[in-house]
Image 1 (cartoon, one colour):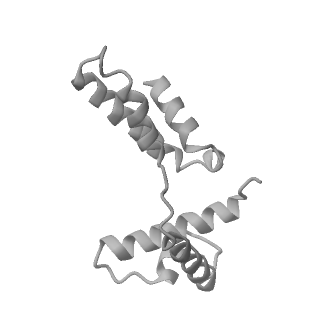
Image 2 (tube, rainbow, N blue to C red):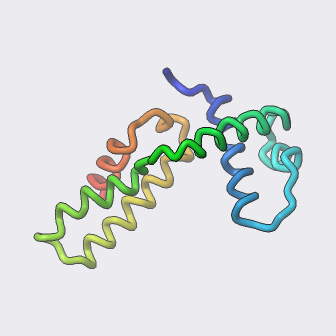
Length: 122
């Protein structure tokens, strides 16, 4: 089914909080992040979603990202296009794929399709 905007907001803020915790030494509280994001979510919502997400990540399930698909698609061009051009196309495709996480519309588009679209646009 479709992801609601509320579910998307919950997932986004939860992932942002976890990423900040892992990659910075900032002592950011969930309540502060919710305030910065002007969210109506509650601290317990982020805690619950974070626990579920961490549990799923601990299952060691490989996730193939759109960037990985883009790299595979562009590797098919290596025999006919210079490595510099392939690298340039890959950088642009990865940038476009990263932009897609900012739009709720792309939440259920498969990684392979996002990558293919990004490569085609390049």
